[in-house]
Image (cartoon, rainbow, N blue to C red; front, side):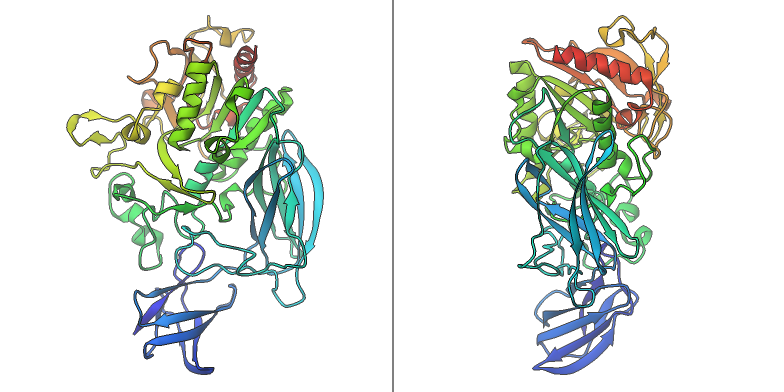
Length: 537
C-alpha cells in the first residue's frame, strides 16, 4: 500500500530514501522510496515510528498513522547552511532569535549593510557535542503555511542564548554564518528605530520577499494555491506554472493558502565578497533585499539619514508617517495590504506627505497580513488568465491591476501602474520635460538620455527595466511626465510627478531597475537628489 511521499525543502521528490517502520519497539518493515519519492509498504493500519535516512540529508524519526487518511508527506532537509532571524523585523533594543541550520560548527556575526558592510559584533561559534548536533529538522507536510519552527524541532538549547539585541542605529542588517568547511550564508534583519530619528523613512519590501520565497516548495509563483499531492520530479513536466498554459495559470484558483514569513530566504543571500557597488548577481536578488541595499548605500553616500522599516510595521501602525517628511519605496514593493495603502494615501493626500516610489510593479496585489507570521495573497488573475483582468460583469472593461480588481488602481496614488509592455527588458530614460525642477543642474535637455549605467544583471541595459509602470486612466489629472524609458514597444517606465492639494507630493520612477543605477549613473543620481531635496524642504 502507498504510505506517503518523501521530498526535500523544495518539495522535490527524493528517491532511494531508506525508511524503517517500527511498532511496539520492533522493526516491522524496511523499504526505499521510488523515483517519484513514493513509499510503499505492506503494513496493517496503525501508528508507527518511521526513521528516514539518505546521504546528504538530515536523518530523522517521526510518528506516523498508517491507513488513516491521505498519503503522508515526509520532508527531509538537505545538508545546506541556512538561517533566518525571528522576528525578521524589530525596533532598536528589541531582540530576535537567530535560527541556523548547520551540520558542522559555524561562526555567526552581525553586520550593517549601508554604503559599506559594517561589522557590528561577533555572536560566537555554535555547535553541540554530538555529531551534526547543530542540524535543524523541518516539519512534515506543507510548512510553507505554518513555518519551519527551527530551534524547536532541531538544534536549540535552553542553556545557551540564541538571541540578538537590535542595535540602536536603524538599518538593514545581515547575519553572516560561516561554517568550518568554508560554507557561507547570510540572512537579513530589518531594524527600525525605537522612536523616529531621521526625516526620511525607507520601507523594505518584506511582503514581496515572502511572496517570492519558495522555501518549502511554495511561493506565490510556484504551487501558489497549495502544495500538490505528489512531490515535483521535473519542474517543467510537473509544475502547473509550466504545464497548464496561459499566463500564471495557478492564479486562476479561487483562493490561496497562507505563506509563512517564518522560513529561510535563500534569494536574499548576499555572497561573501560583494560590495554595494558590485553588480547584483542572480535572477532573484536583482529585485529583492540585495537590490534594496543599493538604495540604502546611495542614501548614505549622498548624506541622507534615514530610518528603515518593514512593511509589517507600516501595516501595524508602528511606522508613524506623520513623523517623517518623506517615505521611500524601492525596487519591487508588489504586495501590499489595504491598510498599508490607505494609510499612505491619506498621509499624502490629506496631510502633506511626500512619497518617492523608486521601484516598479509596486502595490499591484492586495495581501492579507493574518498575524505576525503569515500573509495570504488575495486578488489574482481571473479564470481567463489575462494579466489585465477582465471585469466578469462587463467584458469590455479591463482592470489595471490585481489591486484595482480588489478595490482601487495603485495609479490613483503612484500616478503609474505596471503594464506588460517592456517586461524583461532594460533601457535608459529619455527626457521629455527638461524644464521641470527635477532636472535642475543636470544639463539635460529634451531628448537627452540618462540612466544608462546599471548594477542590475538580470535585465541589464539601464534604469528603466525588468518591469515598468506607466500612466493610466486612474492617474491623478495633474500627473506630469518627466521622462520615459526607451524600452521596446513603448514599454519604457514613465518618470512622473504629481502634487495633490494640501502640500503632498509623489515622485514615481516606475521601474524595478531604477535603484540599481543610482550608485553608478551620475545624472540619475542628481535627478533623485533634486526630488529628495525638494520633498525635504
